[in-house]
Amino acid sequence: MYDRNRFVAVTGDHLERTPAEITSGDRLLNELEAEYASVSSETPDRTIAEPQRSRDELHEIETTSDIQDIFDAINQTRPSDIRMRSTQTREHGDGTYSYDPSWVHSESGTRLGVLDDVWIYRKGMIALDALQLVALEEGIIANEREYPEGRDFWEAVGALRGRGAHIPKFESSNEPLSESSETDPGAEINKWKVAKKINYGDRVRTYVHPYDRDYQERLALELTPVIIDTVESLYLSPAVAYRTAELYAKGHAAGVVPGAAHESSVGAALRIAAIEAGTPRPLADIADTVEEDPTSIRNKFQRIMKETSLSETLDVSDLIVDPVDYVPYIARHLGVTDDTSLRNSVCELLTQEEHGGGSNPISEVAAAFYVAMKQSDNYSITQEDIARAAEISEVTIRNNYRKYTGSP
Image (cartoon, rainbow, N blue to C red; front, side, top):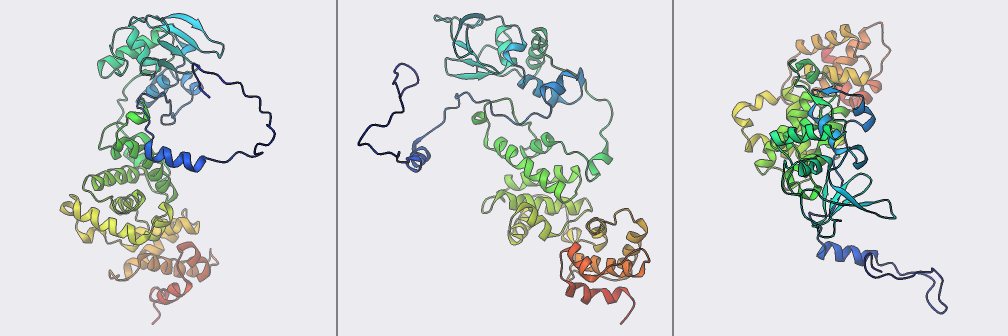
């Protein structure tokens, strides 16, 4: 069957003496595709990163200090939203239209196709968005494969507004970025900032065809949700997410990533970032969240330290976790985050005791919590409760808690 010049009538009637079932060729087709098929970078495909705001949300916004709102508004501008300079020459039965592009001569007068939500330049089958179309019609750019940049970008945005599109006006915020919001666990993480850091500091081009993005851009879009989900699951701050992305990129540039899944290097980068921020997380918890083996993460941790500039600014001793740093984390697992008095008591118990590098800090914190909560009139707690919250064994708590009671 052909989709252009040849047509075949298909009735669906079963012919006598022919098989009643169709032999599946999916496996063969998949093998052939994997070995021989290639996808043209010119194939129309509107798959881009999901917008932060919907069309309805953007229509309520007149000004914004978030450049992503501008990109989202452009990407969601439809042919029915704007006036075109190109002339409509044909209406097809499937609801699509053909236009004679105003910026180039077309003998057929049908070189520009218009679908529900996209423009197709048929010579090369190039998908255009609203900004490209208007930039071409206004003479801001001269090639269908170009995208307006710099001053041309803003000139095209102004022209797009003039054609009827609702694009919020961009106003740079004069307010300094709130450092507290970036260091507050639970604060919103800017996914585009994470992606930019993975992409070596360059903005990921979400407006171009996926096959026209380079490897690092595709990797950034793939790993950004992994980093954000991990940071949120471990109740860490946006600052840790941004630092994780930055450390991952450094490790990638230094050749640390190959040899294991990307998530192993993400886990290693997150472990360093969390320790730097004074909010360490147990290696086992990080491994569970990224679904990778702790040994693999530990190896990547050591390689990132060794093969990047981190070893010049950080000493090994800087990455030894003080048990006190784990107090907020265990308090959250126990559901006692708001009890400042209890947390202070635990910290006091921990500081009274000397801790060598050989002990597990989580074990020490769990034992101190057990003692402090047993001594308080506000709690009825068992070793089993503490062990479950800290994800360690009751035996570990039993072996550690006596030193915090003053008993021999």
